[in-house]
Length: 397
Ligand SMILES: *Cc1c(COP(=O)(O)O)cnc(C)c1O
Image 1 (cartoon, rainbow, N blue to C red):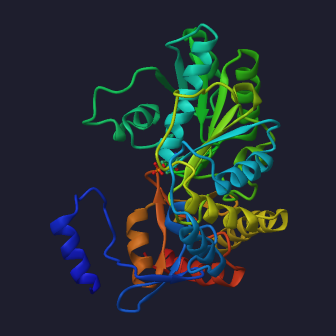
Image 2: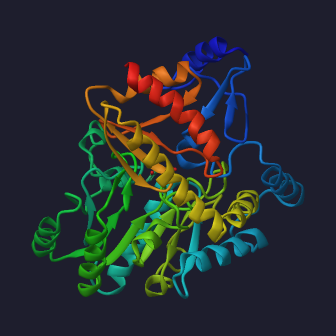
């Protein structure tokens, strides 16, 4: 089907829940994507932080094919090797001693697990029904409970009543958090993204993150980090908290883990590694052997050298943007290859549309920012190619 045919068939048969761009994609190679008509796009979006190792990766495809031939799925009533090897790998890469993994299928589902973990942990300690504090501008998912956790009003229209037990406080505001904790004697956890993705690529201040760790530790309140977008190398360390020099009590991951197959999960530190017991939690597809085999291939690429190059490539983009001194760019922020360019006087959506015309795919974030999240394997030459298109657009618009 042609792009036009796909667009019209989508309108007829698919719920119109997405504000899609008028672009259809048929295949990919490295950091490039191709439409059915053969139009080439350089990808600065990586499926919103998913396609960490790019498109058409042979070893990734072979891992999936070989596992599909061997065993494509079985229930969680039985053991299989891929999820066990992956759990071993992830707990080690997390740096959290004696930690454990629960596998799910997506970010929202992973965060549901994180929330259940915190509630069970508190309930085991005789404090059921407590409150989880989250941050304004956060994004934790689309399920009714994770929407409730999400600190952005625009997601809260229409879907009442929400799950109770969440309180939102402004990010990077120590006094607000202290006050919230004083006024919420039954607070059981603080949950945060260390770089808020959907909210606008807003990194928390390092000092605030240290404070979050200290204040939660002293009150026996769990610190839950949502690494769904920041995790799996995106910010230049395996998990973003490693770049901040703290250890959470538990974290969720998803997007980048399996390089394009649906997978998510949570990792719990030793403190609550035994909290969820048989019957407390589960999911049919969690730890699926094909997704786990794909994830093992992705994780094997994220060597220390690779990760420090992700960090260096992020700095390279920031330097190039700053050196160009474009009036429409107010700020360039973020970590590793999770970058946001705040714009003034220009709508991010208009810039994205103009870039599409010139063969570059880009994201927006929050109300004022462009989001740059290419596959982690992108080269400096490919970054230059995309930045040249972006600069041209920003200087003309
Ligand atoms: C994308 C995202 C989610 C939701 O993940 P889904 O896989 O879409 O359910 C949750 N938290 C953060 C930080 C995200 O970026």
